Amino acid sequence: MLDGSSQDVHIRDPGRLNEILYAGNEVLLERAKNENRKTDWSLLAGKVKDHWILVNSGYHRVIAEKILENEDTSPFKNIKSYEAEKGLGDSRIDFFLKRGDEAVWVEVKGCTLAKDEVALFPDAPTQRGTKHVEELTRVLEDEGTSSALLFLVFRPDAVVFEPNEDRDPNFAEAFKTALAGGIEVHAVQLAYTGSVIEYRGTLPLTENYRDL
Image (cartoon, rainbow, N blue to C red; front, side):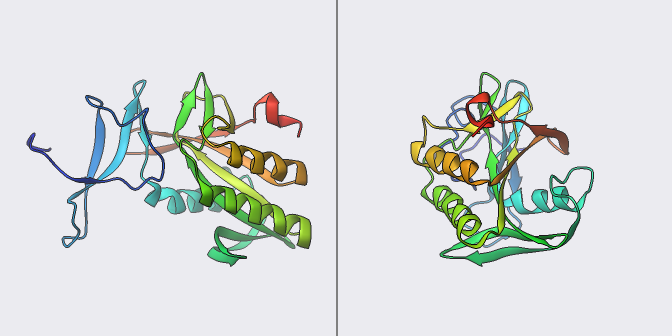
């Protein structure tokens, strides 16, 4: 427990987190394992509507791997193997799967924002995220190789998912183009209790994007 003195905390999340990080809100911190690091603490989660929302993107890869390796939770069936952090064009994509005899590129994104039960990504403009979606669309169109977006939705209060057009219209447009081109989109809902991450199933796209 902190003693009430001022502390510098590392935030490993590319978003703004305005709905989570504000004066007076509860947060969870974890002590840094590296004693030589400049900050002693990392932000782990923040409270929203009595839910802990995991905001540390450093855990995304291990969470995604747990989902992919479990047949009950993986949206990709018959996975024979996968590679992490594989180069594609000018980007590095999170996973390259072998699904049966088919190859699938998979990019993972963490979603911490929701409004009126709609999970929204991103919560801040993301040129990198848009570039990833464009690379996945290109490899699908030019090479016929399957590609997918896997959203880790850390909002147990959401019931549907869509791109956040208000915050990043460029990402939303790239998302629409990718959907029309045949990219797979999987929004996996997760709840964080403060000690355990619970799998809650998958969320559908909103009607605005379901039929693209």
